[in-house]
Structure formats: C-alpha cells, structure tokens
Image (cartoon, rainbow, N blue to C red; front, side, top):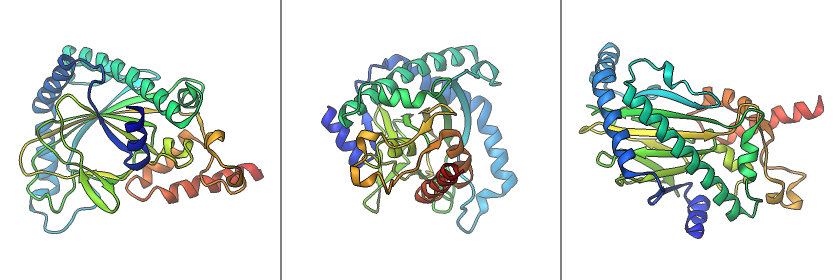
Length: 294
C-alpha cells in the first residue's frame, strides 16, 4: 500500500482511498444531509444568480465564473459550525463528526508520506503546526445541471494551495478531472471512497518529489454533483520550505523552491488561483530574497 501511495504521489498527485476507516453509515448521512440542505437552502439562490447574470443564454466561453453553489466550514484552529446559518442541528452534528474523522485520516496520511519520503515520523505534521496548530476547513459544493457545459466550467483548472485535500464526492454524477501528461483524465466516482490530492505546500516541502496537480470540474447537463472537499493545511504562521533531507547538496545553493510563511502564500494565491503555480513560487522566492537581504 505504501508503494502504491508513493507512486500516486510522485506520478499523479491524486489517489482514491477505500477501507479508510470512516464508516459508510456516516458517509451516507453526510451525503443525504448535504443534498437535502442544497435543495432546501441553496438551489433557489443559485437559480436566481444564474438568472441575474443571464448565464443560460451565454454564447461565448465564460472564464471568470464557476458553475457551482458553495459554502465553507472552518474546523481548526476554531470551528465556525455554530455560526453558519440554515444548518439543521442534525447536519451540524454530522459534519462535526465527519471533520474529526477526516482530521485523523489526514494526520495518518501525512505520517505515511513521511515514511515513504524517509522523513522522521511526524515531520509533516510538525511543519504544518505553526504556533496555533494546523488550519482545517471544508468547502461544500454542489454543481447543478448546466445548459452550456461547453462554455462554463463547473470549476476552472487550478492546483490547490494548501497541504493535503480529502474529497468525498458524488458517486453517481462525475465531473472531476486531473491533468496527466497533457491529457485530462476523469477521477471516477466510487461509492464511499475518499479522493486524496496534494496541494502546493507538499510540493514545496518535498522539494518537488511530490507535485500538486492541475484539476477541474466539468459542468454536466444532467444531475447535481455533490463535492465535499476538506483542506488540511499548515497554520497561518507556519514556515514552509523544502525538508533539508530532501535537498541534494548541489541544490542547496540554487534552491528550487522558496521559503515563506503560509499566510503570505495564501494572500498571493487568492488573486492567482486559476493561473500556473510556478510564477507563485517565483514570487515567493523574490519575497524571500528581500527578507534575507533586509
């Protein structure tokens, strides 16, 4: 299993987990309550947004908008579950339980990655900690049927900024794709699986041994796709840099990846999410060199 995970991290940036230890009953409850919540609280709002922007009649490609209905939950350092309006008590409780299970799974996976990379156990978790522990949150998305899927993406192509991403996706309606060797490849829906992908921070820490990968969501004409992506990220003040054990001696002088504070990277990412990651790394390198000089 370690070997398969290592191959996935080195060559794909994505893998799909079964037998992950999260009960199928809990996953079924999360799915049922998420879909109910969308129908009851979000669907009408989404239709109004589509009508107000005239999206059903677009004739040319839209590149500044995603065909998705979303809300965000924060779990760590402090939870905001109690503050999200419209969430039923049952849904709140279920999402809290789900987040705890995913947090444990994320930490287990980070330790497995350490083992594969030859880093001491707990290294990645320690790097992610900063002074207040990691940040962890969930983006709950629904992708309703779209009349012009050739002109509007469900979610435009991007790499994820953070650490390790755990996705519970619809097992019937597909749409997620990753870019591999210049080809867009479907990430197939599989019942009760958790899809894992790696963010930019793990690419930096592993000095490029593992890479974050471009992915996107295609809008579909039939069915609403559910996507619950949980992001286990470094703390805001965590300092991110390549693990010294993974940097070859000759690379030390010409370090490929920068050293930076996670929050600074996130500020930069906010405006450049749908652009290539390499210029982001270069920009952080420029910041680093001014810090070193100053």
